[in-house]
Image 1 (cartoon, protein in one colour):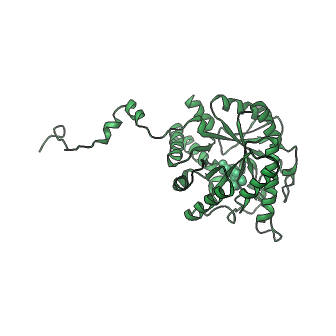
Image 2 (spheres, helix red, strand yellow; image 1 turned 45 degrees about the vertical axis):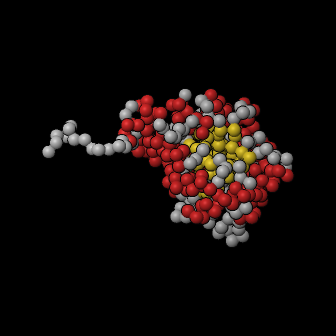
Image 3 (cartoon, protein in one colour; image 1 turned 90 degrees about the vertical axis):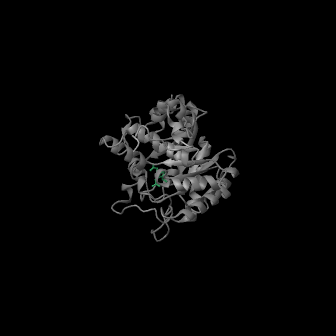
Length: 338
Ligand code: PBG
């Protein structure tokens, strides 16, 4: 019997040669996450009180307008080129119709104007959906029976909402509602109103996911439904369905979406890859609140290393085929890269 040291396999191919040193590993690295790939979701609140921490999203805050502008400046200086803004409204402003959304001087529109005035080059994106405004927490208005969203009535509202956001100066509107036909209606409304340059980042493949829990706490849309647990199953996709997911992406591209999105990201890497292979459009993926919370929770317990898990999670999303990643880690990662 040969000793272990003397034992030699007759191996012409030894992949480990490329992993021998850090320099070699860097040389053959296939995927890279850049600050410019990241889009930072930010929560906006009325007033100028100190930023309110969001319990289930450590390091994330609801920001007043002055703090929001400050945060955007920091992100821009770190190389982040885009933010997605979400309003957290006072419960007193919500009703079944989401009337406050029509307020030309509402919170989100003031936030957009403030950010675009301070940082005209920063790409500003806003959600097109009624959930921050409705007392029931759904993304649209309800039908006469009150047991489901009314698709077409909701689309009419969303098209008008997108025009208001475009007028305030957003670069992209991001319909996150999953109503049928909304991308086409929004494109037509934007063009008719003279906002041909405003783009559509479509939440094309948005699953009915448990991972949105912390976000609903952050914008206050979870408790809005009262005792009934909010289910968006009649409009968001069934997590079991891959073919249906691809059909949605194809439809949104045909309806005029400029950028497609898959959401959540980490549990849907196969879908990201599928959409990447079928569409030439830029593809975004949203690493949602629950993905962020999960990593933080495990790190807090000492069970996972925060930075390594964070970086690996984003690398995986990029490797699966996403060009852009919406992530609450945007600032931390940009700092680490700076
Ligand atoms: C609302 C919206 C949601 C998210 C973005 N836009 C939640 C939902 O559909 O209930 C989730 C983002 C996250 O969890 O980070 N239309």
